[in-house]
Image 1 (cartoon, protein in one colour):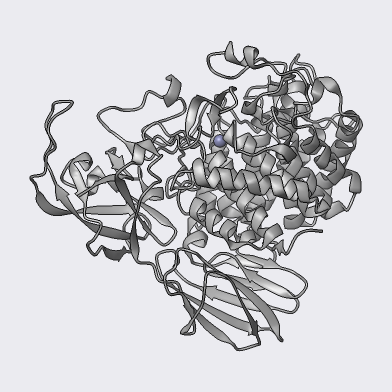
Image 2 (cartoon, rainbow, N blue to C red):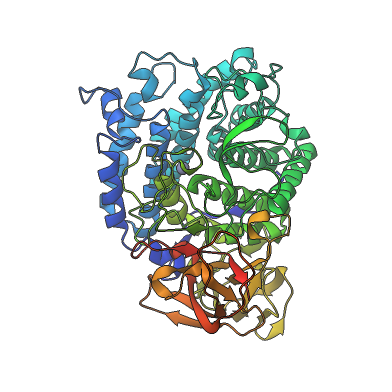
Length: 632
Ligand SMILES: [Zn+2]
């Protein structure tokens, strides 16, 4: 095993009243709202398909090819809610659907309602998403077992894994690219962790090996399709699906940003079991490329709806080319941003390098959650870095596809809402890590961790508060490693200065610590190669990126020029946007002309810009929003 630690089960970690615990406080309202969408006949993800497949309802299949997977993600999130709350009503609901899922499985282990219930054939087209759906079922089975100690879905998953092993272990030529949206790799590694059945992780490794094996290079076929979706057979090699280059030889983050993040996450899971150096080397190269050339300051990873790779594949919903990071048309699908955080956490787990934890944190406090309203009941697919209310976004047009001015409830592609639910409800799993001799503290949020030997509690309103109180209720000579974020100036523990990285110490029952993580607001800039941000600045405080909304500011946001050498005032506003630190940023208001081009304007008056955390934008009235500003 190449893992340095395991993340912890929610049976051991309980979130209390911190930033993350508060986000699912209204869990019944969240579940009711999501169930309403999942039972709506026009929503792309639909739970009723399992009732139909189980023979308990006489109706027709409706939904996207990936509907099953999105239902599994919802139920996975509900398992975590049960672990957080112990609410029997949640348990009953999840168990009801688990039984229907089990009954939907075909005799030979296959399970996918959009194939079983229609005249579509198995393994006919790669974009039927069979492996995506099945992958999320593996992960649900593990979450279900952890929550209820019930092996019902583990049995379903084992049978399905056997079925897939028989099909894919011989590397069938026609199916080499069918795992293009590969939650199946992560899912099989999750399953192996519970069952110990070797061929499950070996099958996961086979899916990694298949990348780049197809010899048919089909750039023309891809170029012929203006949406970049390419042909339907899937038996071609393209950067869009990360199949042009074998993963072990890859040097860049490329193609569809959800499928890439799932591939990199799954491959990290495979590495965590096999310890194969070539795989880790490739993943580190890809990470460096992603984080030095293709990621937004908010942690969004997905610049374009329609674009191309450096190697000539047309792409969609993808990473941009080097430094291609537009703001208003930034695509940044919520699923992709969260997928990148999932990958970073896995890299942290196998390397102990806290740069991965720092990046996971940056994503999760920004682009990872900007896709939901504060109540977790309305959602964005796309997460741009600027918005203009007078030029609203036509959501079906080319670069603007899947963008909307208002968060929605049901949708034609309902993949992001359950991704948000399972991540936010399950985030307690990532707060601590445990190895044979060490407890890791990877995230700061109010929570308790308890196992047979250890009892630790953490209290903080991080990331709005700089202090974290850590109390060791029970421990004997326990080694602790605390992640100190790189963005901190002069961090300390009990007034002793510490450096960024893991800070190690030994603790015993009764020890108490105050971790001080100073969070002065900082003016940031982009590398000048990023054309859209050149000469501009944005503001971060700790891991949180700030944005200004029209509702808080009397001048047009585009006429505000920030003074980067003056002091920023930070204020905690308990009743605003569920409690946030807002910033008053010194600026100059310089009125502009209506001409397209004119001599530079410098006359104006001093003022301030009020800023809120980026993730909280679009929770009030429709108005302009900017992350990046000109400098005064
Ligand atoms: Zn999505």
